[in-house]
Length: 214
Image 1 (cartoon, helix red, strand yellow):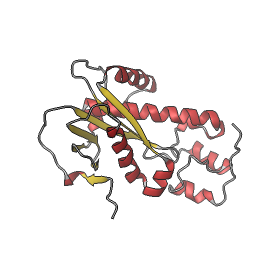
Image 2: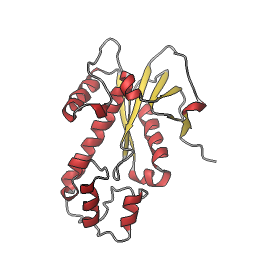
Image 3: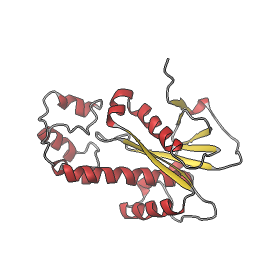
Image 4: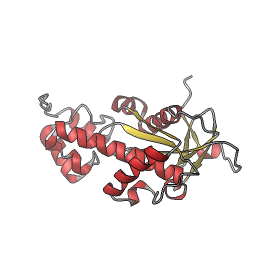
């Protein structure tokens, strides 16, 4: 039997600290109707603090962009990874999110002794891990990871907008807004849309194939 890529938080409660590096992990893009889910892992340098870290949702886009560059410059190491639309549709969004987190952690240049993950689920890892509800607002390394994941995903949406401006991805970033749903009705799903998500699935049979022109 194939092992699941996540554990419920209560299966692995950790209430102690361990010596060594600590990584914060967070994701962006579980809710949208299109695109990969992004995850980031960050090990901060305690000797080089970064002011203003917070849950990415509580920061303006300009502030996130500035912090993104600062995190990349000052963190001991960081990694951003994705799970594709195909993996989301095949595995489901929760499993795909855990997969993206696993990839982000494995992409770190330095191996952490402990991983703190935002939320109440843990990916299956070979290091100690703890889930922290609301961790993106409580723990700086998780805040940094939330910023890297969010900015990376927003940049992906902006790039998709350049190829398909009729869908408005630069504004809704793939979420199921009224504008996005109207575009789906008019133009049909793109290959980047998640067929396993109900609003997209309902349109697939009657969708008008989008133009392949750049």
